[in-house]
Image 1 (tube, helix red, strand yellow):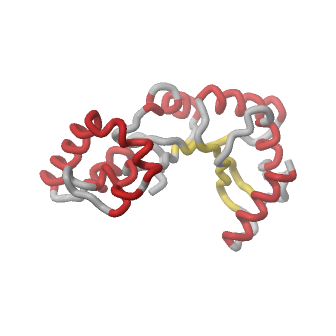
Image 2 (tube, one colour; image 1 turned 180 degrees about the horizontal axis):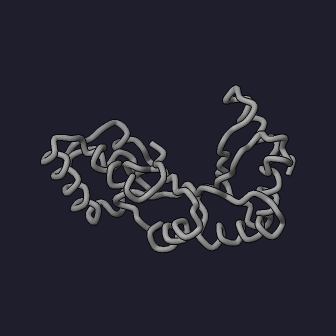
Length: 180
């Protein structure tokens, strides 16, 4: 619990604020989800967090954590920040339906797939060339992703907008707010 309190204090110090509206945990404490819930409880931390979210978890983990929160009288996670975009849609299997049912905000990261959804086929950038993490996530599926990227380029050209606008417009029909 003390470790999480220090992380929260450091975050507030870095932001120059005395509270945050939404504190998103970028880790999952599998053995002790109650520690996350208790530490981020608004009353337990003198109102330093208004709501809490979680990043990169499975739907069953979010369900279990929110059931525990309800049972123990803690605040529930109100958002989930997962990996979701036009070419990586795994969240549609279980997370998206669960979040709709439970009114949990989806705030996905990698909205443009490391730049892949913002560049016409054949275009490149320094990031596309040097981002080894994005290459690890997307490099192995380039052939399968190509038709989607071509379709985004086609729609962007047809409507006189950028591929970024097309990709984000699609995502905004699916989630609360993407992290860009």
